[in-house]
Length: 207
Picture (cartoon, rainbow, N blue to C red):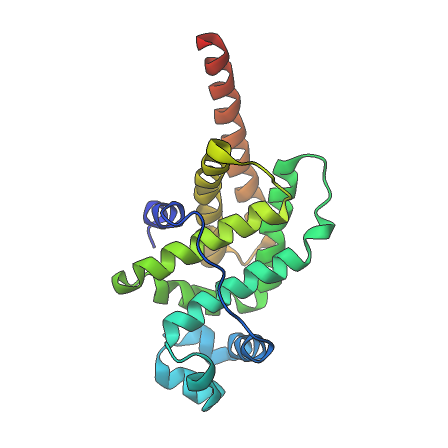
């Protein structure tokens, strides 16, 4: 999986529309993610029907791409539901808490989430991938209670796209140890902090 390709996808759809969902669909998604076959077998319509029966075709008529997009949307909504617990005074710490929460909550289904991303990486699903990652980046900022607008809104989301995508890929491939994921995310956030401070100093000198 190519991190730069995913980051580009995330920033190409910065304000995607909300994804429709239902309690029945959420229950089905959670059931599917918990099925061992969802993490060990490439996703196909036949696998969905084998795991979920006829309800899969009724609630997800667009097939595996719709299921994959809905899985990430479910992660977004679970994270937002817990956003009241991200209470640090520093927004960078709230962003950190939001990302770690979503990954920790999804840890039992890590391999299934990897299959979901593999579905979205198919070239014909490029638009779905873009809006899925864009929606997740926006949800992280929302969970962190960021209220920026205008150019700052855009630059923050572009920056976070790189951090989130690289951390997501690290978690998917080497995330069996939560401490290593935290260390990786901390390094990425520290890099962003150094770049931001340097940019602010240069901007001040030019002004």
